[in-house]
Image (cartoon, rainbow, N blue to C red; front, side, top):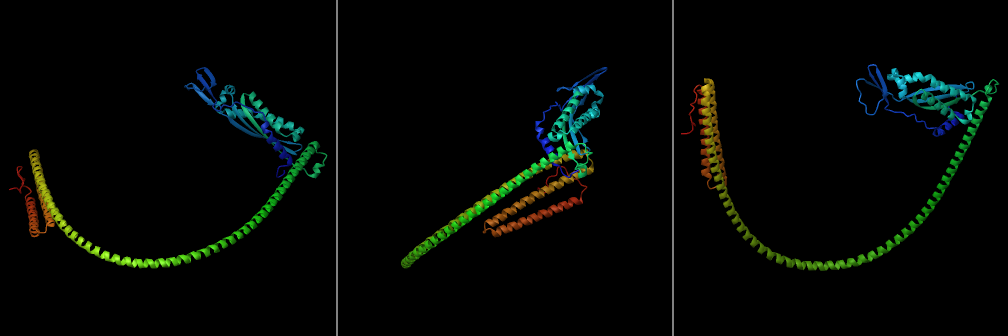
Length: 464
């Protein structure tokens, strides 16, 4: 076998490709959603195609009739194995409702059943058409008609079996190169076929050579035209470049002459401007000196007047600031005094409310003491007494802190009460220390005598 396709094989392939558009259109009528319904209820059996709106019941059984594809290859060797033809057949098929009703037992595997049952019929039809090729007419006419005959034969055969199908056949040929001794051998019984093949090979090669020569001539002509265009373009570019250089040289000469003329004019103008500037500067210096002397005299007089006026305003402003500061200190003192009085009243009210709450808790404790044991009563009384003492101490601490803050503000507001406030603050700090010592003594006494319960009617021990 040759490594590549022979000219005859290429010619046959071209004929096959060109004739595909001329083939008759075959519509098998496939239905992708086709299903068959078997209704079996007792001895009654009914089969029909599944409708669009179908509600299956317990006695219904549905089977799909899908579209399948079947591929196989049939080969025949002609003229003493000189030519080999392969028929590549592709069949897309679907079982019709009539075929399914006739083969209910094969519904679960309907497509394999069709392949098994119709394989001999289909392949027989293909082989029958392949044998007709031994006459040799296809060498000059091509294999298109043979392919269409095989497709038609397969479609007719399967349609007779109630099977919808669409067959596609593609035939490939290959030739064996014979040695010289075989070509001249009288035993080769198909000289006319071989001569037709040689003639077609020669014609195909001749046509290919002419086409290749035409393409080469066309390419050479295009190359020469491109080369000529490049030469013309280069000559035009060179001419344009020379014209541009001449124009640039002329422009440069004109620009240099213009620059020389402008420089001469500029030199004359600058000389005249310089002389005028010197004369003007001398006049300006003289006028400036006169103006400076006059201005200095006026500035000295105005400066003396302004200094006197500023001194008077400064003294008046300082007096006003002192008055404002004194008024602000008095207002701050009154405001702090009022705030202290309000805080003192609020502390008294909170103390009264706390005493009421403590009395209420004492009354509740008396009721609880009647129902609980001695140790629970003692713990409750101790907790109440402790909370009362801690609250009194916290109130006194708050009052003392407020007094200390108040006296500190008073001390910062005025410097005249310095010694008095210092003594007052020291007394408050000593009072606070005394209260803390009294609180610690009471707490120590309470810790030393835990078994003695406090009376329910006991008031604040700090009260007189």
